[in-house]
Length: 445
Image (cartoon, rainbow, N blue to C red; front, side, top):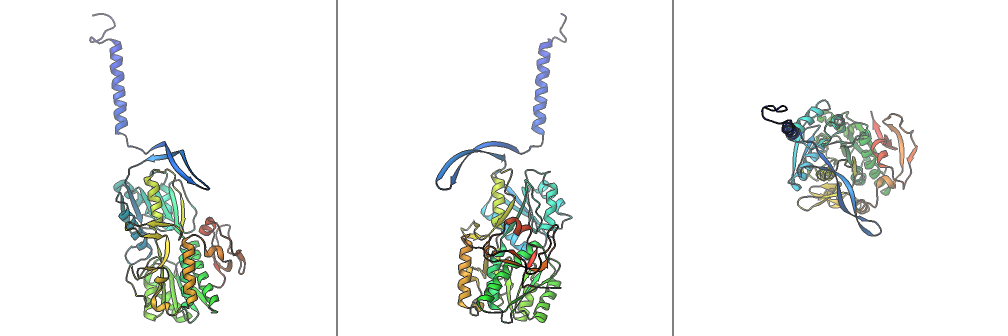
């Protein structure tokens, strides 16, 4: 046997064999490793329309994802018997109906202490790609795990906290637009001059919505030369049927309210309106046509929130492989979605018994409302659908001296003009800094 050989194999051959084995082992380990989202820079042709139409090709960063998506919603309350979670549930079902490649899963009665465990269960066990907290207080904890799951979109409703992230989306509809239209109807209907709101908490989200309603009431009162007061009493909870009933009864019996609405989520205020024989103005859904909770003999009008318009934006961004989706969505009546059946739906609208617009006003109520108010509702709704008018642009904001003091932002003193007429506040201000009631509102203890 010659020197330099071992077992009949030369050192050169042995090294080649060992190298091949090592490469094979590394490749096998790589194939067995957990796959991670792959980011690629791709060329995409887009059409840009300004003064003229231009076709340009640009490089965009996209994540290579599956063409299927699972939308998971954590509902803070039960779904059945609520307008808020009920509207979110309906929205997700409409998304799944339009997009067969999108699956909807959910959990109910999710508090802030279990939002993260539920989210991780839905991600790891059921393949959730988009996880939504449908209220701020229990949706904010999702941001704690957003970096851990970079290919999952997390989203939370905006209540007043400004936290966002690359894959942590905040969203809310411009409900105040439809609430303004409701206010026109309510202001025209009241005979006692007293309108009541069963409300939840004095937070930015709630004060902004109540302001929209109040502006409509005040405009109707001015046009009809009426003296109308809006009374607000807080329950201290989003969903407490017993307390909501007590507050509603107090408003009717002690403050002579003959038009009642709510910024809470149970059906108790509506029950009181039916029992007392007064008008009710609904919130979040068409409670007559969708739930059959009452008839148009009690419900003068409702506003309907189509959360699916916002969810569609998230779903499209995820399916398109956008690694950095739009992380603040604040959509209004001039934003819309085409449903599976071809219906064009704006983000919010007035609705009642399956009808929209002025046709949604209760026939019984319509007979009591002067024609100039009906015409104004029609004109203002049409303008908002076109994005040509907004109550928060048109009217001035004068502080009532009541509200919620925020860090570094005290409640403006009573009578202070915070925003002049014909000036649009920024979205940031509306979403996070609207911390006062409008002058003339009666905030009860």
